[in-house]
Image: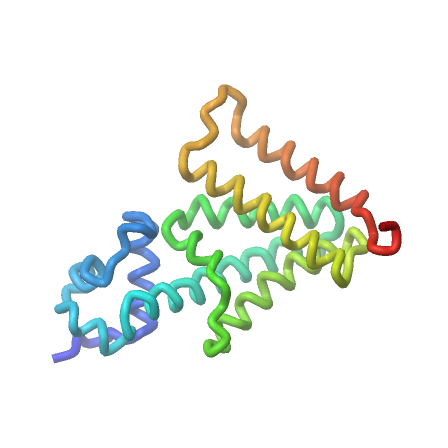
Length: 192
């Protein structure tokens, strides 16, 4: 007999909470079924398997991150927008250590909500870059630089990879200032 109130949305939400508690690598269907108090086969009524759960978790986490980045950039431009977006990105990764890695998955083209969430997240970055006069291929390259830099920082921070005595917040501030400088002096396509 199906558990009352259990649907795909509830399963994915609980998977996100569990991932934040135990880590993305420890999120399994068996652990999730146990958490929900159902037999493992019951989960297959709501998700087709581990990969389908990972995709739905990615869609959820990407939408959450997109919402936060969009709110951060609203009404801001240039360095102010960059600081707000970078801070929101880092804050999301710190608050949601289990679901943050799921934001790195490429949106499933068969899932319109996942695609839309990915587009909103990139849109927030693009809005930030417009403040630096970047568009077209320059904006694409700058988006990749910004994303890989922030992802690298938050991933190393989450793994405890910053063991030197300087405060990590100070290093993050320096990183954002360096990104601001790099974006402000971006070599335009016509200059190359």
